[in-house]
Image 1: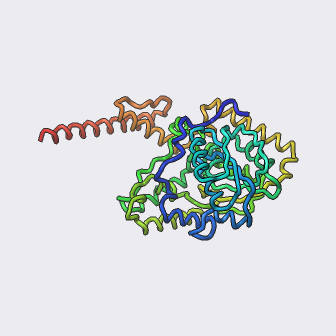
Image 2 (image 1 turned 120 degrees about the vertical axis):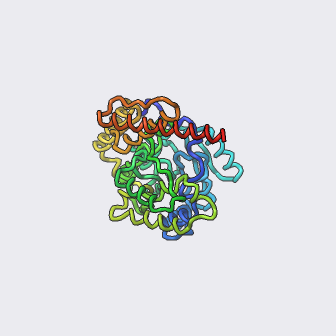
Image 3 (image 1 turned 120 degrees about the horizontal axis):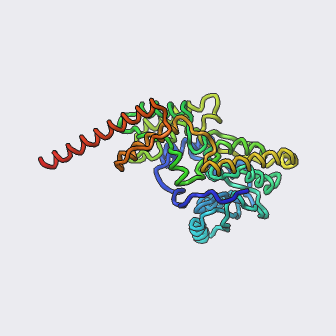
Length: 375
């Protein structure tokens, strides 16, 4: 179906540090929400849930292979195969698997067009992979076909708004929680910038909001845990005071409590992450008319997005306002006025006035710096 692969230009975007789950208290809280035990991770839980090792796993968008190596090390599966688009990551995965003596093989492929022509797969693993998949219906359908009736599809993934374009009510909740922190712990909140995401990694959260609905087309979701993150994720991510020792444990606990409360009466709508264990519903593959409709829907969606420079949804209010802010800040940094064509007269006046104020402020700071050097 794809005319060309939708991939990040540089695979290094997939690994870094400073994420919320690197904070020990967050890690243990996510375990508790997922498995009921702060000291039990999802791999151990999956092994106990299934009761015996799987024969052969398939790891989607496996990256450097740490997930499948961990699953084999925990006795979840006996052997496996991983697939990824980035050959440099697969080189690392193969080397690490060989060093660990793990029975793992790797295939370079775009998961959107992958044939899934594998044998003996009884476990498919999605660990932060499906939110990078454009043709989510095609892939979910292929996994349903691939697995035997007693096979398992396990998913630990971001299932929040597409490309992290949070709704206004959620962003307000994040803002309020951030403001409630002592000044030294507050994050300089930046709404995810759509144009930067499209340039840096157009796959990021490309259809994250569709993961659970499309999964339900082809699978029975036996075990579902909504992990939250609606507030804590943005506050803790890349916020140095929470990642340095000594950690502000009391404030971490308080923000996690706010995060849990935010799930409220509609956890699926208010969560950013979910842990799911599902089994294929083979009967879904028999309704050829419905399958044809879903295929046509996906084809139309992807063609429309290619014609719209990779966008799937109209520009939202927060995206628009923050885009103007980023454009203004870039203009100040480069000394070029921002492009404000197409704005209403009132917004033109607003941004022009703000531009003038920023220039005056920059000029004042420059003059003060010169005076300071002279003295």
